[in-house]
Length: 139
Ligand SMILES: [Zn+2]
Ligand SMILES: [Zn+2]
Image (cartoon, rainbow, N blue to C red):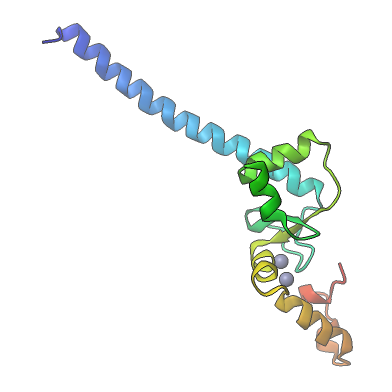
C-alpha cells in the first residue's frame, strides 16, 4: 500500500500531466498554425482559383501536380511540409488553393470555377462583369 503522501503526489502528478498534455496540444496546434500561416502568406495568401482568403480553407498546392506524392515521399505532415518549405527559403512551384478548388482539381482535374470563368469571359451579360463574383478576377 502506498502511503498517503505517495497517493497525493501521484494525484498531483496526474493533474500536472493532464494540464501539461493540454498545454502541449495547444502549443503544437499553435506552432502548426503559425507554420501554415507563414507558408500561405508567402505563397500569396489566397486561393489562386476563387480568391478565398480565410486561411482555414487554404492549402499549399504543388503547381505541377504530384504534390501529394512528393509530400508523401518526404513523409511530412501538412505543417511539417510548411516548415520544410520555409527551411528551403520558399522554393518556386507552389501556390495556394482552397480545399474546394484543390479537391476538385485533384479529383476531376478541373475546377468548376474554370468553367464559370470561361462563361463569364465570353458572356456579354454585365452580371458576369461584376467585381463581387470571384471568378471574374483573372487572378
Ligand atoms: Zn478556391
Ligand atoms: Zn476553383
